[in-house]
Image 1 (cartoon, rainbow, N blue to C red):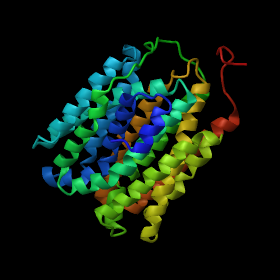
Image 2 (tube, helix red, strand yellow):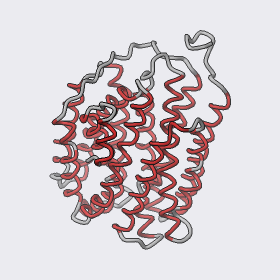
Image 3 (tube, rainbow, N blue to C red):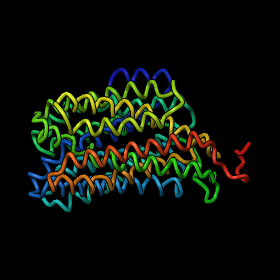
Image 4 (tube, rainbow, N blue to C red):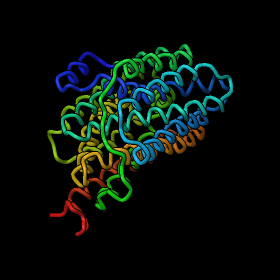
Length: 373
């Protein structure tokens, strides 16, 4: 799914509809996760914490795809279409099994397909600053429109959600994209030490963020007493904030400060009146997308080629998303949602502070690096 604003925005930059559709399909796949926890737990008779295994498998495979594929294959539009077809079929197959382990296996394969699509999209986007902003805005607007619908569909069960995700993948299948590039050669990578620190910070942001964010629907229900539809409005506000942040990200030069500010906002979602839940999620989306494009640009500036770290960045962020639900699920089963919010908030603030440290510390490039001035 993509909104009219995003389509118009993409057209003005000649962005292929296939890339827009691919980004939207993957964004909705992740946006659906909080709404699938309860339906999957009820249908398969497992705890809500155990459902985190679905996300771990899905995002773990996503991470592996982003690490491995750039080293094995050259980017191409053919790979994008094949991955989109695979994701569409796997989403449909996810509505069929009656055994929880089979569902986990299917979502693992879906993660591979989604990882390939994301690798190709960001490989193309990181070649140009304006393209990066355009791709960054796709996810938030997809979630802005899709969150209420996902919440409503989840009341009908997980099967309805997976069928919707399959339909959302159709644009990426139907439309083609001329994606080009070269397979990443072994050893031809900038030895910038700051890039390694930035990659670790990105992994930390998604690790602590996913541990809490995937369980925000449970926080809305158990702590604030909100209905699923009311909670979905908060997720839409999170996406609206993200859309605004993605549009404004290029206007500032201090991404770390924005990312660090997510920490207090995350803690706010589990404390105080219900209004804090809405405010915290809205700021979370805004600050996240105000910061992430800037960090990706920092990686690009410290690399031999602009897209050198595209796969590594998406892969390590996916590693964080894969491991985070394990931490979150443990706290959910223990009934310690407020403790989870505090730990995640502190971790998010610390990851943002790491980015600040890298930026204030300078390039940190070794003397042999060709980019050293």
